[in-house]
Amino acid sequence: MEDHKKECIVCKRDEQQVPVTQFDYMGTRFWICSQHIPIIIHEPSKLIGLLPDADKINPAEDI
Image 1 (cartoon, rainbow, N blue to C red):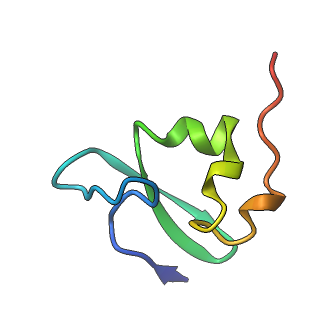
Image 2 (image 1 turned 90 degrees about the horizontal axis):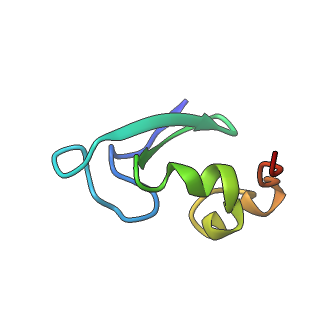
Image 3 (image 1 turned 180 degrees about the horizontal axis):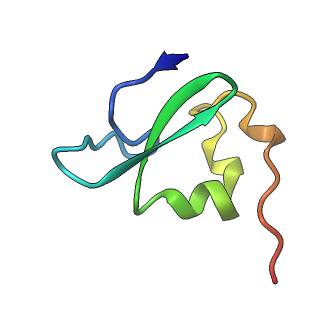
Protein backbone atom coordinates (compact mmCIF):
# COMPACT_ATOMS: atom_id res chain seq x y z
CA MET A 1 0.00 0.00 0.00
CA GLU A 2 1.32 3.40 -0.98
CA ASP A 3 1.57 5.99 1.79
CA HIS A 4 1.18 9.71 1.29
CA LYS A 5 2.70 12.33 3.59
CA LYS A 6 0.68 12.87 6.77
CA GLU A 7 -1.02 16.02 5.52
CA CYS A 8 -4.60 16.81 4.63
CA ILE A 9 -5.27 16.16 0.95
CA VAL A 10 -7.45 19.29 0.85
CA CYS A 11 -5.67 22.03 2.81
CA LYS A 12 -2.15 20.48 2.92
CA ARG A 13 -1.78 21.15 6.66
CA ASP A 14 0.19 18.43 8.42
CA GLU A 15 -0.10 16.58 11.71
CA GLN A 16 1.94 19.28 13.45
CA GLN A 17 -0.68 21.90 12.58
CA VAL A 18 -4.02 20.06 12.86
CA PRO A 19 -5.32 16.63 13.80
CA VAL A 20 -5.33 14.37 10.75
CA THR A 21 -6.80 10.94 10.24
CA GLN A 22 -5.91 8.35 7.68
CA PHE A 23 -8.17 6.53 5.25
CA ASP A 24 -7.44 3.98 2.57
CA TYR A 25 -8.88 4.27 -0.91
CA MET A 26 -8.06 2.24 -4.01
CA GLY A 27 -4.98 0.67 -2.42
CA THR A 28 -3.50 3.96 -1.25
CA ARG A 29 -3.41 5.55 2.20
CA PHE A 30 -4.45 9.20 2.38
CA TRP A 31 -4.77 11.74 5.19
CA ILE A 32 -7.47 14.32 5.86
CA CYS A 33 -7.92 16.85 8.66
CA SER A 34 -10.95 16.95 10.91
CA GLN A 35 -12.22 20.12 9.22
CA HIS A 36 -12.39 18.43 5.82
CA ILE A 37 -13.81 15.00 6.75
CA PRO A 38 -17.35 16.22 5.88
CA ILE A 39 -16.22 16.73 2.27
CA ILE A 40 -15.67 12.98 1.86
CA ILE A 41 -19.15 12.33 3.22
CA HIS A 42 -21.24 15.15 1.73
CA GLU A 43 -19.31 16.72 -1.17
CA PRO A 44 -16.87 14.19 -2.63
CA SER A 45 -16.92 16.03 -5.96
CA LYS A 46 -14.69 18.64 -4.28
CA LEU A 47 -11.99 15.94 -4.14
CA ILE A 48 -11.74 15.62 -7.93
CA GLY A 49 -8.09 16.13 -8.79
CA LEU A 50 -7.04 15.32 -5.22
CA LEU A 51 -8.26 11.74 -4.96
CA PRO A 52 -8.24 9.17 -7.78
CA ASP A 53 -11.69 8.51 -9.25
CA ALA A 54 -13.30 10.97 -6.82
CA ASP A 55 -15.96 11.55 -9.47
CA LYS A 56 -17.19 8.00 -8.82
CA ILE A 57 -17.85 8.58 -5.10
CA ASN A 58 -21.47 9.29 -4.31
CA PRO A 59 -22.31 11.73 -1.50
CA ALA A 60 -24.20 10.44 1.52
CA GLU A 61 -27.94 10.69 1.20
CA ASP A 62 -29.74 13.10 3.47
CA ILE A 63 -31.60 11.32 6.22
